[in-house]
Image: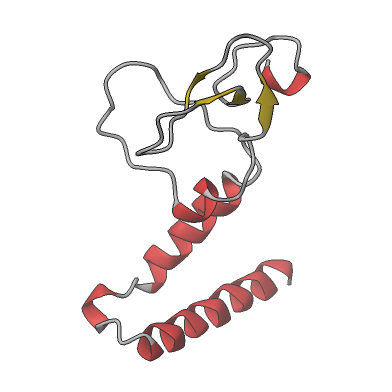
Length: 114
Protein backbone atom coordinates (compact mmCIF):
# COMPACT_ATOMS: atom_id res chain seq x y z
CA UNK A 1 0.00 0.00 0.00
CA UNK A 2 2.85 2.40 0.83
CA UNK A 3 4.61 1.65 -2.47
CA UNK A 4 1.40 2.35 -4.35
CA UNK A 5 0.97 5.70 -2.59
CA UNK A 6 4.58 6.70 -3.26
CA UNK A 7 4.19 5.64 -6.90
CA UNK A 8 1.08 7.81 -7.20
CA UNK A 9 2.99 10.76 -5.72
CA UNK A 10 5.84 10.32 -8.22
CA UNK A 11 3.46 10.12 -11.17
CA UNK A 12 1.60 13.21 -9.97
CA UNK A 13 4.90 15.08 -9.62
CA UNK A 14 5.80 13.98 -13.16
CA UNK A 15 2.49 15.29 -14.48
CA UNK A 16 3.15 18.63 -12.78
CA UNK A 17 6.63 18.62 -14.35
CA UNK A 18 5.03 18.10 -17.78
CA UNK A 19 2.56 20.94 -17.16
CA UNK A 20 5.31 23.29 -16.02
CA UNK A 21 7.48 22.32 -18.99
CA UNK A 22 4.62 23.12 -21.36
CA UNK A 23 4.13 26.52 -19.71
CA UNK A 24 7.85 27.23 -20.06
CA UNK A 25 7.73 26.23 -23.76
CA UNK A 26 10.20 23.37 -23.35
CA UNK A 27 9.94 21.09 -26.41
CA UNK A 28 8.67 17.54 -25.83
CA UNK A 29 11.93 16.01 -27.03
CA UNK A 30 13.87 17.92 -24.33
CA UNK A 31 11.56 16.93 -21.47
CA UNK A 32 12.42 13.99 -19.25
CA UNK A 33 10.64 10.70 -19.76
CA UNK A 34 8.95 9.14 -16.72
CA UNK A 35 11.81 6.69 -16.13
CA UNK A 36 14.42 9.46 -16.36
CA UNK A 37 12.32 11.59 -13.99
CA UNK A 38 12.11 8.71 -11.48
CA UNK A 39 15.86 8.09 -11.70
CA UNK A 40 16.70 11.76 -11.15
CA UNK A 41 14.24 11.97 -8.25
CA UNK A 42 15.67 8.82 -6.64
CA UNK A 43 19.24 10.10 -6.99
CA UNK A 44 18.30 13.44 -5.44
CA UNK A 45 16.55 11.75 -2.51
CA UNK A 46 19.42 9.32 -1.87
CA UNK A 47 22.06 12.05 -1.93
CA UNK A 48 19.99 14.54 0.05
CA UNK A 49 21.74 15.95 3.16
CA UNK A 50 25.00 14.19 2.31
CA UNK A 51 28.32 15.96 2.10
CA UNK A 52 29.91 15.11 -1.23
CA UNK A 53 33.69 15.37 -1.12
CA UNK A 54 35.42 15.55 -4.47
CA UNK A 55 38.85 14.23 -5.35
CA UNK A 56 41.83 16.52 -5.76
CA UNK A 57 43.58 16.77 -9.08
CA UNK A 58 42.22 16.67 -12.57
CA UNK A 59 38.47 16.63 -13.02
CA UNK A 60 37.06 13.23 -13.83
CA UNK A 61 34.59 12.33 -16.50
CA UNK A 62 31.92 11.49 -13.93
CA UNK A 63 28.53 13.11 -13.99
CA UNK A 64 28.11 16.40 -12.10
CA UNK A 65 26.21 16.77 -8.85
CA UNK A 66 22.46 17.29 -9.46
CA UNK A 67 21.51 20.98 -9.40
CA UNK A 68 19.08 20.69 -6.48
CA UNK A 69 21.77 19.00 -4.36
CA UNK A 70 24.45 21.49 -5.29
CA UNK A 71 22.34 24.32 -3.89
CA UNK A 72 20.89 22.64 -0.79
CA UNK A 73 23.52 24.24 1.49
CA UNK A 74 24.66 21.01 3.12
CA UNK A 75 28.41 20.77 3.56
CA UNK A 76 29.18 24.38 2.70
CA UNK A 77 29.06 26.22 6.00
CA UNK A 78 31.44 29.14 6.62
CA UNK A 79 34.29 28.97 9.13
CA UNK A 80 36.60 31.82 10.11
CA UNK A 81 40.32 31.53 9.38
CA UNK A 82 42.52 32.86 12.18
CA UNK A 83 45.52 33.27 9.87
CA UNK A 84 46.25 35.94 7.30
CA UNK A 85 43.46 34.88 5.00
CA UNK A 86 43.47 33.96 1.33
CA UNK A 87 42.49 35.49 -1.96
CA UNK A 88 38.75 35.69 -2.51
CA UNK A 89 37.56 32.99 -4.93
CA UNK A 90 34.81 35.13 -6.45
CA UNK A 91 35.50 35.91 -10.10
CA UNK A 92 36.76 39.47 -10.56
CA UNK A 93 37.42 40.10 -6.86
CA UNK A 94 40.99 41.03 -5.91
CA UNK A 95 40.47 41.30 -2.16
CA UNK A 96 41.28 38.81 0.57
CA UNK A 97 38.98 36.90 2.86
CA UNK A 98 39.27 35.07 6.16
CA UNK A 99 36.14 33.00 5.67
CA UNK A 100 36.60 29.42 4.49
CA UNK A 101 34.13 26.81 3.45
CA UNK A 102 34.15 23.90 5.92
CA UNK A 103 33.85 21.58 2.93
CA UNK A 104 37.40 22.52 2.00
CA UNK A 105 38.75 22.37 5.56
CA UNK A 106 40.60 19.23 6.61
CA UNK A 107 40.04 19.73 10.34
CA UNK A 108 39.36 16.51 12.20
CA UNK A 109 38.03 18.45 15.20
CA UNK A 110 34.63 18.67 13.56
CA UNK A 111 32.61 15.50 14.24
CA UNK A 112 30.82 15.57 10.89
CA UNK A 113 34.05 16.00 8.91
CA UNK A 114 35.42 12.55 9.84
